[in-house]
Length: 229
Ligand SMILES: Nc1nc2c(ncn2[C@@H]2O[C@H](COP(=O)(O)OP(=O)(O)O)[C@@H](O)[C@H]2O)c(=O)[nH]1
Ligand SMILES: Nc1ncnc2c1ncn2[C@@H]1O[C@H](COP(=O)(O)OP(=O)(O)O)[C@@H](O)[C@H]1O
Image (tube, rainbow, N blue to C red; front, side):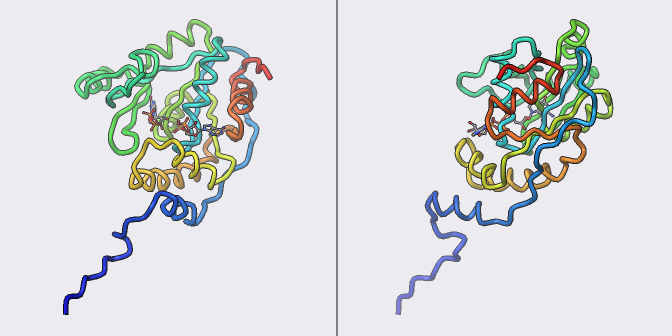
């Protein structure tokens, strides 16, 4: 008798909507609600750190601020990841080789740096931030949680803002909707996101990214700038 062996369920091909439902069906972690900063709004220029789980919209909110609030100074990170189509050197990132990144670290030029999502290194150039603060700018660093923790060690006076999703299902939707990661990578990032959400109490304030303009307006207010609604 010729019997076709059945495949284990986890190797069966599943369509995208089934994968989507599977990711959404997993137990949702607690998602923090809005929390005002306990710290007073800085009277002058200073550094604000924006962190939060993958796909919450950190890049989107930062891009909105770059476009609509030219008075804010957004740090441009150095990264070893290759540029994506449309990304410009010095605008989105400083794209450097692994050797160049090592050199920046060895010369203590990095305010903070981290391996993000297990592959590439990202870091903030200390000299650029110092220059911007000295020039009286309100500085925004959009970095990951490991980097935020390092900045808290070296610049405890900075303001630390956690960007939270409106809900866990919405975060899953944004990650899937962005469509830039494989399913395995999405799963890995969602596991990391669970840990990142648990770090919320380390931050001075929580801004919920429900609508980009609203979240940006709340963030610039925390930075000491005047929001435009
Ligand atoms: N620690 C640290 N993290 C950074 C820095 N720049 C970007 N990141 C983080 O790196 C991650 C990857 O960013 P990106 O390359 O734009 O990829 P994408 O978010 O997956 O589209 C995000 O979580 C950023 O917050 C940095 O200078 N330092
Ligand atoms: N307030 C929002 N409402 C709906 N979708 C959003 C919002 N903010 C961001 N997004 C979408 O969510 C996805 C992830 O945003 P992105 O900025 O890439 O996240 P992060 O930089 O935190 O990884 C993108 O497709 C983006 O267009």
